[in-house]
Image (cartoon, rainbow, N blue to C red; front, side, top):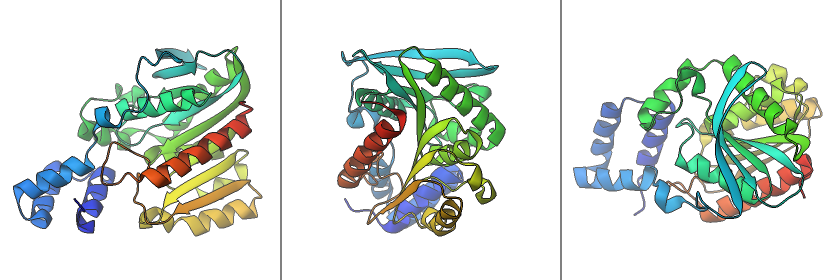
Length: 289
């Protein structure tokens, strides 16, 4: 089923503002024409965590645990996954979308650990009570998070990863959607960050770009016009400050093209290419063999 582009754009509006659920459903019904068509469209757009899982929670190659730590006075709560194989490895902070730390991000965290990193999927909604099970309730919490809270949690998480006895001491971060913007904010605020990977995230305050010490890999979707329009100014600022970076805009894909819980927006070919680039980039920058 190929969806009307207006439905995809409406869903993006719903997930990013966030748009009231009742208003969203009324507008969706108006575009789809019938209740059955609207339900079919939602089935393609909304998350299906079980179908998209790539790495089982009990994968024998990994050790996974729930993390609750206080680091530098900041309370951290998240999902920590490490390879069982011995050796020193870089740490990677996995930063969720605006649905919080959900089963999809936990699966992505396991994928990152399986690639050889110590991976931490952090729940950035911890200061507000943690990620609720209802994604609409989760989205509604994000405007209440301050930038200072996000950066403080991110820096505490990087310190935790760097201090582990199996660590190389170098850390990276990868973020998606809201998390992509958080990676950019962390890059301008955390000189200890070695590498940042941004998936379809907003740009940071351009005046702060000269503060960046990390190398950046920025990956955007061509159909995500709101974010693609920000790229030229961000790239100009990065070049002016001599920040090591690479920007890739994947053709003919939608926002969240790596998120395989959404049948409509997921693009397998672009996701594979972007993930391989991400892993290679983070391995190089964090000293992970």
